[in-house]
Image (cartoon, rainbow, N blue to C red; front, top):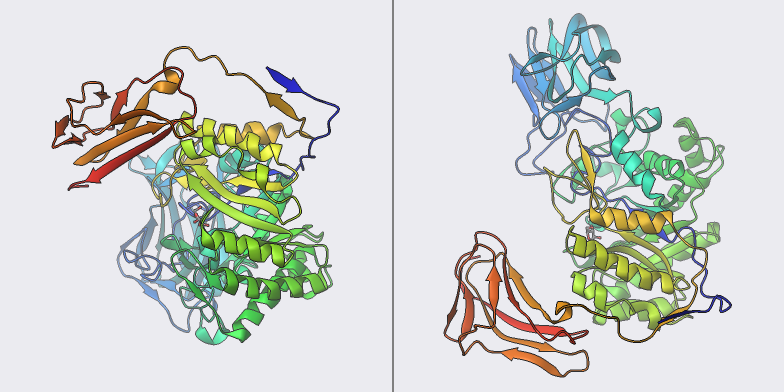
Length: 613
Ligand code: AHR
């Protein structure tokens, strides 16, 4: 029976409770949400981004084409440019299978060119079957200048190539092709289908731009004196202003980030989709594989000042230094920033808290209304996590960011995680979580878990699934919420769960209580399955216990193991008292039926990796 007491007032649920975490991972920006169709448009790809890159990655040259890095460059932040001899050409391969164009739609081409003696650039959009749009000719003469042309696609193709040929010697940079039909028709805009999918979620907030890419490398010097070299940390100031002046950089996830999608575009997108913007800046205590804390006080102060400048960029009047830059970019009104994250998975808790407090003091002194969110490291449990929370409580931190990626079973079992959290301590920002898969069972386990978040809406204030986007041909992290390639995008089951919660966020929790045992038909709760794709894995000592510790099933495989069956195409055998998988052409599942009355059982299994993968 379920008893509901509408008179007993439960926690209020904030409209911002469920949001999205946008991270530039899996080519979420370039080749993803950022609508630019040309890959490596400014010839800046380098081995510092990825060992396989050259400045001509994604380009094919005919004739004499050379990437130069000298005083003839377009500007100080855009180091490389292409020098193309008379009669030569370059062709760009776009992302995935190529440049995607749709019949009847318009595409805006632009290029910065320097041709002191004058030249004619012939710009062609074609695929293996022929021309995709009428060829355009652009006459260029003199010093660096931007030239434009518009294409209308006569056919649809996902295999397009953009070629630029020159009659005379020319220097080229920022070779760009944008669909006119971007999200809300914005210039330097977003890919429509992806932006609309995110908008359809109706997210309460937008956390950006990462993730590990925010804190990794944050201790490196980034003074002007270091030049516009690679492996600089992610600096929001590098991501604003004219796109040709945004110095590209190595992305933590192993590719080049153009920053064409930068802080202005993130704030604009948050505003467009009605989401509270929630940027994350590094606190100079890295996690994500590097456990270091900076001792460079000048660097720390510089990051703190940059954070204050960021707040001014978002909220300052147009007369302020950084508010003026926002206005120049087209947004005179403030973006209404109310929350900022300081630190992502920065997991030396004491070092982190010392530096976090410096950030917080500086922010609160100038912007007392801003909520400064701290972090608790990469794990959801253990000493580091406990210490981070303890220090957060002692410091009176308003909100702490937690991250965890776990199995669906974990999510089902931990529905009550927040029931026991201290009501007088910091609030929770669940900034990253996912059960490990995009299958229906994963989505369902997340939905079940989210009912626990919601029941605790007095303490869990913000929650976002992670990561949000993945280009199927450039995957560093899976599962993800929305998948795409250069011509299609599709939602995961996890997306649908998030959408249900975000589109139907209640105002208040109505306390309810369930009693009795739900009816179960068939031995559903009694089946035990072991599933693997691995080869040469041996299972031993399978034990199933009830939640209160009673042994329900125990098998050491010293017998014939006949109570187990398996599905899948791999082979299994009982050998030396172990159940051994001898090959694995596909997923294998070993199953035994248990007792239909089992509820809430735990599975303990020893899997011995013998050899192979
Ligand atoms: O979302 C993927 C990664 O998971 C993030 O970069 C990091 O914060 C976490 O470890």
